[in-house]
Image (cartoon, rainbow, N blue to C red):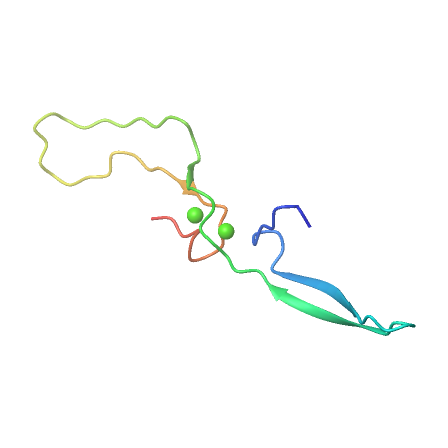
Length: 83
Ligand SMILES: [Ca+2]
Ligand SMILES: [Ca+2]
């Protein structure tokens, strides 16, 4: 398997492994394995818009909301939680 595994697309992989002995005739058996894919922080947050704008008065010392921004992260929690 040479393809990238992405937790956000697949959380469990099932593979079948076959073991064969060297006898003549040979005997073999197969076994299924469940692989739990572990999430890593492989995505960065992305802002919803490429540009934001806000205004504030010069010398203003009051805490106020200038603008609201939003970013998303394609990772599942906790790596996708954005603050
Ligand atoms: Ca992330
Ligand atoms: Ca991830």
